Image 1 (cartoon, rainbow over the protein chains, first blue to last red):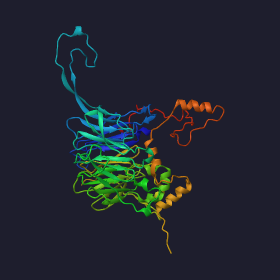
Image 2: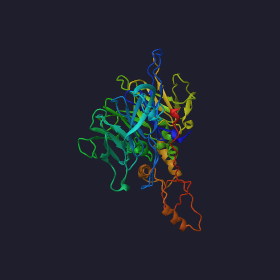
Image 3: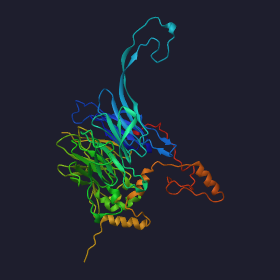
Length: 426
Length: 96
């Protein structure tokens, strides 16, 4: 299989009707949910390919001898304002606004052209007619409407659209910029943590997100396990945080690996904006925005890896960046989901405190059957159906997952396959 | 008598340090950050190449070390070390 097929981002749009994936080859594939079949009340619509396009191409910055990967790091959808759909996609250096529109009719009956486009001999035209629109097979077209380039020296890890739907932020390892969706030739730098002397660099920005309701508030996470909340009303350059979220560390537990595994790979606000979730190498943490000194909940994703850190460091897996997501906006249910190795992914129910491990794989799951829970045996006697830590495949990583905004449908990306699961109905 | 409970992380750290005794003293720290910031850096400097070639006239050319992305003045990149520009004409397999 091609390296270009490696899925690098997955995102539902605001209605959940569309699901976008980005890959290492710079391509975007959008799936659309079928209209619900009235006769088949047991299943929700399936997702079929709707559009695919090349978003980014590989580039070479000759001035800096820098190869710029075309890999799509993030996709974020804009809320729908008219018939067309808009999304932002970004690679390491350039953000693009794409318009995806449908065309289901075309003009026919031109006077000077044949239907196939060839020009008619004008001397054969004896009457005039008015061209009319006739239906045609649906065509979905993607076109780049804005290109936001040249604002990032380092590699972009996040983009986040503001609740004002006019601006968005883009974050790289050391800086965060604020853009207006209509303006491509300038952006405002709102966070800059680059030290004057690069030898003093101790921390980088790993993720950033705007608050879902407060258009002046955003957070960014760091490689040292901290999250800073900033208020753009306080100053133009938000180098001084309004809040600093950090869990105190027990110094007697400190090891060579402590800082690496504390690095936050993803941060996501809850739908209400009251909480935020962070993912570090071994756990998912829920923070109450009103409490900076520790998370309110911590969920262990794969604690059994703690005794494998040496080999995970040697094979670089310790640097894998897992994402996390909240369930849709159902107010009764509070579940968080994140991926792991061996094509396993985990869900934690915040209400019941129960958790489950599931597997995204064709070999082990028949279509339309309920997924069987998995269990990893950390040590000692392995029970039947359990998998031992040593037989986990660390090349099968689930880094990207997404939850439908309204329904219990989830999208799980393995290295180069996309799985869509839904909960059992009735 | 004190009973020593071995914290798994510390045991792993000891394993790592046994394999790589010269591992940086700073825990985690800047080496990784620097590597992260330099991702994508692929140097081929024709000036360096020719200077090194002139210097190494009679000697064996050094081959690429384990980390091909390291920038060094004397290491001579060979055409095999240079990144291949990929074709982007293939459709994603997700698109069927």
